[in-house]
Length: 457
Image (cartoon, rainbow, N blue to C red; front, side, top):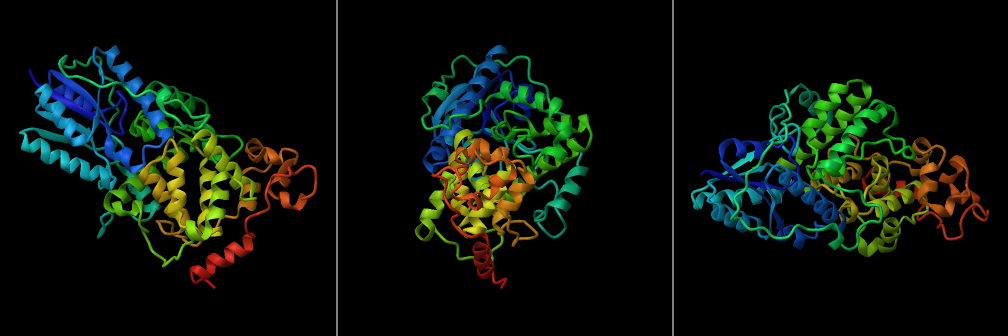
């Protein structure tokens, strides 16, 4: 009897899962395996919000497999050691897994390949599982990757995508392979109060609801901070509870300007993955250096703390940071404004902001989080690296009635309309709560400091 192992990583689903379908096609029995990786835990990446969401995903994956006659095998420890042990227990000749792009993921795959080959086994790595288009499938002339989004998007849009795969009807798992306990959300402490629920069933329900009622208006409303008109599918995509490929197919099938705009955002996700695949050091090093001498925790500690706590004195920034703490998620426009304020108005090292986001974001993805931070800090792929987003003008544009701010900053609940974005003009008024702070820095002063640092004055 032929047996294969499927190692689940960032692809916690049964629908549209090429490694699982390949394993089922080539073997009589399959071991669906997830390893709670000691290295990820030791790195600090396994933050509470993501651990809780992961527990939801694993519980749902196990339930889906049991409905098909199978089960999820869970182990803990070093991934390579555990996969090799399970393969030996099951007598498996092949291990299937999805490709990934971080430096750690690339090293993990290579270590696993060598260890399996030494034991006479084979590793099959499948692409276009985590991303829509595999990193490296679309490249410019004389370069290993696209450094500018627009030409990448043009080429990416021309690629013929594989068709999504149906979930398998049956999965036979060897009885003899033991499993540890599934992680439980209830065991995770320190999560955000309003953290979303994870799992493939939840993700597919959210996807269907979004495609039905949110997609058509996306082009016009995706920056509407108060309207909360984005898909909120990013956590499901990060954990692979949803297939990005299936989502693109279904959005394109719906058609219209909203679908076009949404697919473009999904392409941004692939764009960052193809950058990181070639430049894995960009997770912690400037993609493009301007010789910045960033302020650090030592030189700007109080301001950094105020930023983290949502007490900068700039309401839309504070609202975004408080949403992050409460939900483990933040509106995309809020991410841009909070990032620009820290990196350019306060001139604080983008890595400090990226690390804080990774402590809280349930969709905290190395490729997208780190490279979006570099984009807004002006060290990444942005073609206008010196742009600075003004939180007052941006707040008035994307939260014109102040609804988003009042939702998250109750100290300003008494201010009506767009005046909420400039509460210092009403200082002394009963409409401004006494605990709301004055601005950390004048915007003009922050802009002048940034321009001096970049040699633009």
